[in-house]
Length: 239
Image (cartoon, rainbow, N blue to C red; front, side, top):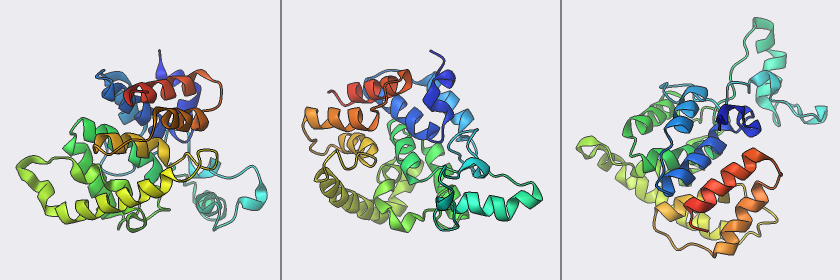
């Protein structure tokens, strides 16, 4: 299948969905060369800066269909584009946020891709702690980086940030327990990347039925792309 022609992969969460698919394949012991290579190209993950959600998603089309929501505080990138950047012909790509990056960290961790991890870390350093979306700061979501901080580096460089990795793990454990108490009917957004992260960290997993419900709820739309992704990650999780 040509994944670039699957409907969901031309939307704003390309990096999230492609990463989840690839993570499921890796957990099942399969290769992900094509989908991973395409994701690297489309999301510019081979760059040291500027990781994006997808090629089609820019600040100019990041607004809401409800005009009342297109304010500086609710849709900042859209407001800034229309009120400032548009005058100069500047239309940046929408960068990845922590939700997309958490999925990307699954593949980095399983591939032991320390070069990719270094690119992510370098980007955060240059952006003074902000995600590529420029809307979220790393200090407010330390749990999102638990896998990134545990990727082994040459010469044991990762020992330099071992205390930070320890703190991130503690916060992740706490957040995971709280998240599992929230009914799937209310929220599954955090769980779709949280569950495979728990699996990779060797944590106790919820029931198979619970896991199935998470992905069946989040990917509820009946289209081929959603079926592809949720089938891959559920198989990877063994349910």
